[in-house]
Length: 101
Picture 1 (tube, rainbow, N blue to C red):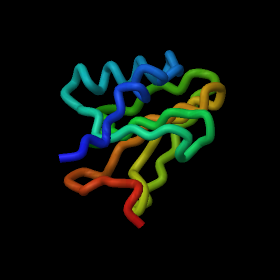
Picture 2: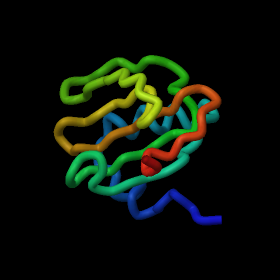
Picture 3: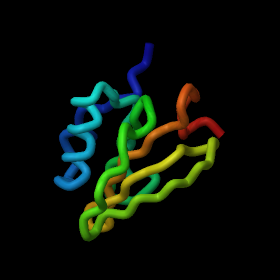
């Protein structure tokens, strides 16, 4: 089985604000499903969770919350406008692979 998680991507995740959201999601039982570099944003790291966000998080300055509701991509994401890092979540009980078109 091929892993879609690259540890270098996780190590390069520069957004401290999004890291606190990621850490909380993992603490609450969510898991990383996949990582990507330079997609969907150049010079950024994207982390895709296995399940929807467990809660809505307060957006600090420079953090955007977008509820895409697009099954081709994902349900929602938090984006750091200063680092181009992103955390996205899928729909409940939905196979998630953003690279399948």
